[in-house]
Image (cartoon, rainbow over all chains, first blue to last red):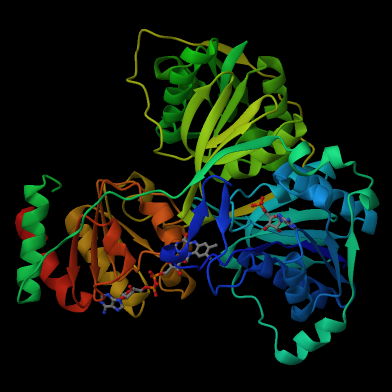
Length: 267
Length: 324
Ligand SMILES: Cc1cc2nc3c(=O)[nH]c(=O)nc-3n(C[C@H](O)[C@H](O)[C@H](O)COP(=O)(O)OP(=O)(O)OC[C@H]3O[C@@H](n4cnc5c(N)ncnc54)[C@H](O)[C@@H]3O)c2cc1C
Ligand SMILES: Nc1ncnc2c1ncn2[C@@H]1O[C@H](COP(=O)(O)O)[C@@H](O)[C@H]1O
């Protein structure tokens, strides 16, 4: 089975809230001091899902695509170190300022350029903008069946069986290939590359592709082609002031809390 | 022509609570946009739900009533949804940020040549656009965005909008939609229902949640016991779910359930932004944590700094006495 995984490099989502800052005027998140960007966690899980499909089928390739500035190369390298075969970096000034639509458009062109594989895998959402739409948009553009927010993916002969996380449980879904899948955190931990694999990955090939290579005009992508416009980016403020309930014993504290809740008419 | 078309969902009670909330928002917004409010219902056995659409704020209700639509599947819902949008030609399409909305909104928007904004918290009219405020960066930031193409597709976070007071004197025109036999490529073959014991998280007025600091799965039994006293639902942080201590269906947060109860009791939870993204809308948060510097305290109205193991039995007794 041939699989393509789309991955994104993002500011570390585990950045402590105190170190998280935005530039409101530029509508950009400022890089946190000493905290490096990482592959979006769901995308690492997507790579894991792809590697397991390849292993289960006994042959095929896992190729990686990422659209972004220079730093996107690190998400590709991480995926290659996990065991993926080849990387493709969609890199062009024209892509800057794009939205989910322009990203999905470029990714779908790149997928067509490489040849639509048996399975296309995405993260459930990129943990920067928390949108969760690119996988579905690509599926629609390529007219492929899709299943989103998955906790398990299994190869079942020529078809794929998945378990989808829904509000009140899980759904089992069968999909023919080619198809599009998006992976959720319930999938479990991805493998972590060892030093030897990181060194091997350094030798694996990463091909750069521009908008023109994908038959796209600068006006189709980036800010020019976007369908969604951002008007503001800011950090929410919390105006609650905590009252710590003191007491010499746990019993006193518990009684104090219950009293406080009663006085505040919460109970 | 409606200004706003809401894709609703139904449950045992009829129209789901998020559907009523979206109809409330749609009525408010359509006042400024001009034009009416339509509701689209896809499912099987919809007549009762359709009858409550008018009182809830819809002028028109489209019903696509067919066995093939009994539960959500991308391939069966997408063409029907597309047909309804084309028939209604709304300026704005609203869906809930539900299992259905997450999956359907981006595909439908793409098919219609437009885009979707996901999980909006606030909606405001600006000219002919709806400005949506949404959470991003794991709850650390908010962005304000508009869809520049038409129709503007937006998913709405449950509990972020107010429903209207039901008005029995209002009724909606019912338009039955023809449903063709679907071409299912992806096929749902079965469902595992999470054990639906007790109160549903999203409906609970009180939620008691536990995190990694509980130290093991056994402690959730103590939380359940406290929840029994408080008539509360039990939630958990993702760390606790990932460790297998509690089912993923009970996870509160960015990638779990969003709750906004009157009282949220966070026990041995640090208060990471992604957890707060799911409970930050609670009216009152109470935290029990042994670390006085835990971020959770900066979101809490009341706090106890102590080992939960010591506090929990005393707290259950004190609540039991107070609520007797
Ligand atoms: C993309 C992404 C999405 C995520 N989505 C979610 C989500 O939906 N929901 C979610 O919850 N998390 C989510 N997370 C994870 C989140 O970042 C945190 O890692 C997680 O919420 C931490 O869980 P916790 O508070 O239980 O554990 P910890 O952060 O380990 O906190 C444990 C707390 O328990 C306290 N404690 C320890 N022992 C005791 C004791 N005996 N008595 C009292 N207190 C004690 C400690 O002081 C500490 O504050 C997500 C992360 C990412 C990157
Ligand atoms: N710039 C990008 N390059 C490659 N893949 C991406 C990019 N942006 C998003 N994706 C993929 O699409 C998924 C969903 O992203 P989003 O819709 O932005 O939340 C991510 O988890 C990735 O798999």
